[in-house]
Image (cartoon, rainbow, N blue to C red; front, side):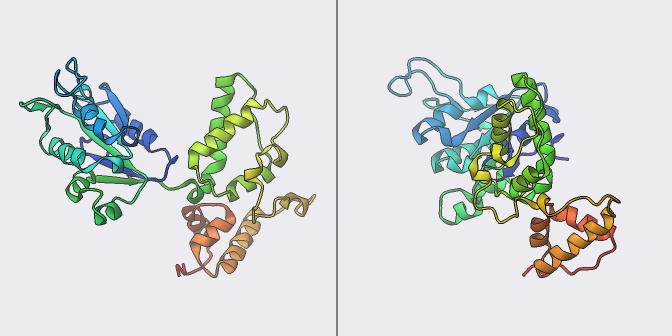
Length: 302
């Protein structure tokens, strides 16, 4: 819905959740997909350089300006500009960016005549901008201009059902990149990784997959292959397979799954969020299974 339009977008999410990847996806599905896509991390530049980086400058505008320099806004004309960690912009730069978003005009440093550019802005932040507004660090009018469409990316700890899919994707990717065999994990490893809090989110998972791929293990990855950070201080019973063995006659999977859901709901006192975390699945996946098995629970959020 968002991509085919020219609406500005604000992407909100913790570090490592894939904000730039979403921005690139929007660009590729937009009418500007054949135009330039420029990414700028606003936190990577000091406050006294961000303005010249964005808007450019004229020769003689300041000491050391020995030639005209085109800014990122001009370079992105016709395309898309991704401003990561936009909360790091100082107030002065925010004011000038607001003017550009409002009418497409900007003033290079040292210039007296405004210039015009047609640029779609996709901004991203890992902080609460409304809180930044309340303490005077972010302009409310700029927030409203950027927040036409807001996309919230969940942390990996809130989408643990995706971990198995992400492992498969990254193992395949790094197998091709490093020309090694594609690793695999046993169920104990998967359970541990689904219990882990992932402070670095998908970026951390990506790095772990590359690490394990480079080890060139010729067997399924086990707990001993994981860095200790993933196996220490885990509340999950790491060796669950040692007390569960598939009976010779097999099992009724639906009955087992329904029973596990019942137990999780009881242990969480009816709280869907806590129950989904106990089961290592998303809340939506839990809702789906409750409906599938005709179970009846009331979500006790508090």
